[in-house]
Length: 345
Ligand SMILES: [Zn+2]
Image: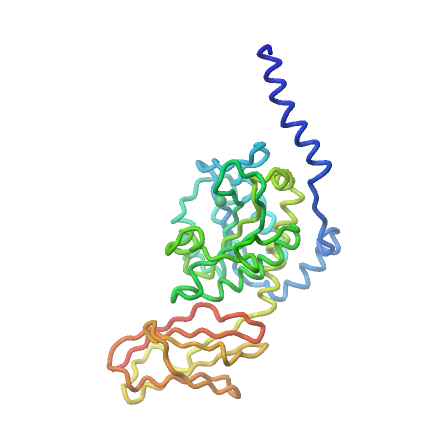
């Protein structure tokens, strides 16, 4: 084949392939609450009650010098679709009255560590890192699912159950609008980041101290998925799934824990009895309460009538201790990370 013809041939093979695939296989539907301006506006208005005033930190993965992850047909660069989904999500959240902060809102290099530092100092309520996935084997153009990651294993002390709650809500609605499964490694499509990096997890989840999840929208390496991901309209639907999941999470709410003592004081050993108010609009699940003093399980008393938790620390030696409390409401949503230093003299 002549040089020009050979190039033409090389061009035509993937083109023909895409066209034949796109007519037969590329498919997605418009979510009924998104497909018209009026339906979308009504949904956003409905959820604004729960999102108004919330600060959401969005982290579109990669970008700038890091544009290496590409689909097999080069229809998409992962960095770009992460950004597009992030920008559309910002629109929906902002319209609902939330404040959105982004680690990047254009094609820019942002080191991993900096993404967490920006989130930790932003005063945001939640960190959502947006990514798309690729399989371990380069030749695998079949695997495709939607997954959402939280940090550590549920059995680890550093695991925060509220991260998994947020992951579950986002995962359910995102996978639903994309009509994707959640993968075979998990029953609900949420995964510990230890599945990928044992005992370390993802840097952005490990180093971020505010509630944090990482979304892997789907596999840009799947030959059909790559085509959907290259369409702005589909990226908007993805953003809608994340938006709706997060909105439903805030709608379900979570318990708030408040110390009922002056946090600036030191307790005299014999009087170190501490009280905390556990408040939730749906009600506290008494069986869900755990209390740790310096990571050791500790006894407590809970009064369901006043929703007050009492800790008797009179047996502890003088010193400084870290009190950690976890509880869930009757919808199963857990309190956000709660740690307090207590001084006993
Ligand atoms: Zn990525």
